[in-house]
Length: 392
Length: 154
Image (cartoon, rainbow over all chains, first blue to last red; front, top):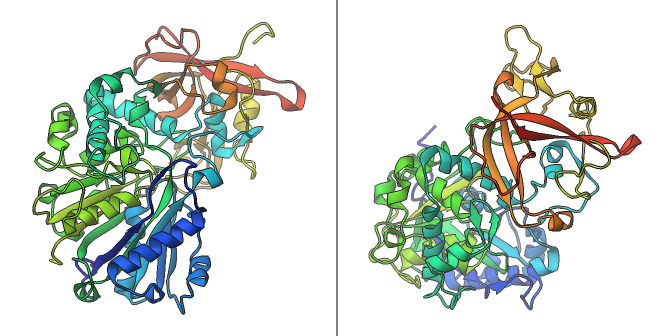
């Protein structure tokens, strides 16, 4: 077999986003917003939307390729793909699947999309009101452990204990997102500054997470169009080449009742080395990072597992100063991300990573060559991706 | 527990049940007798403990699995103090403590429960020894028993 790699073979040619709304505030139905984002992404790329011949999404998106293709009159599609798992673990994974479809020749123009209208379909942060909790749920729900925040706080607490991580670290991650959102007109939390005092005085949701350690819940839609590197060169926008996109999980991370043998992890321990090997770059080469904040503790462990900092050095490395664009050591979550721009299950982190390559971010970092995304820490499976301004 | 005693969490949360395929039934039946069971591979050369219950041994892939009664003690592996009601029933019971307890006598498998025997706002340390408290709920066909954890001397 010839060399098995997707390195530099594809690029992001178009991105599209609806207005982002607070939860249940969207004036449009979810499906309509999904269509709008796809049309905007095609227009951004300079591609007729009918050329889309592949679909990839994640997190059990309700808006199926067949319904979208029928609505848009798409003459043919050769790839329809759902990345398994919940939350945002499949953001970069759906991108990886789109890339694979193009590299394999199944499709030429793949759209990765996500649409969410929680006002229409219900919320994430609540336990189910059911009389019985069968199977795996029986070992957690009767004890009042039902939400993602609770599921992940237990892992983060253990990581912070093992490595002496202070609450200031989580606070710095949250304040970074809020600081960047203040310059982003698209951010739901623009105009809502977060100070140390406001963070410290905010209510606990579940220790060690304050309110501001938890992602928002929002309505909106986003879409990303992936094509071959050759095609991208001739299109409207500066291509964001995909150097690497990795996905996966490791030994018994899904074992029930919190029995993963390696417990205090974001689940990137086997994915991160694969990503860097494929991309041919390392953490020191990364100019700007979008790291999925379902909860700040997930960012903490994702960044450690992607080699940005040793686990015992977090208290020194995780500061607003280090993460703030444009001059911080590692500008982080430069749109405001899931905490302060919009919780579009991290697809908004991928559009932001593309903007950093193009030079159009609201918090632009100078001369970005390598722009990285980590998706959905602590779920199973997870994924991450490296974009670049050049294909090699 | 007697009728006068309060439950750790308010009533109205989902009751534990075996999986639709029956997995876990032995464990929940045993808790009603205040016994703590953990699944264990029955192959002589394996003896792997595993939790939660599975249909197959994750080490040797034997189908020959059983449950063994273990001493109902453990060590706090992690904890969280919950302040937000994720279920309507919890609105009057905040905050409460959820602990993840490691069982060294059973291959370090872990179980989730609530911390009892101290104020939920009191400190708990990772590494604290705990013992199981079997908390009986309901009657007849609706009876079930939760396994809670209380700090112990060693």
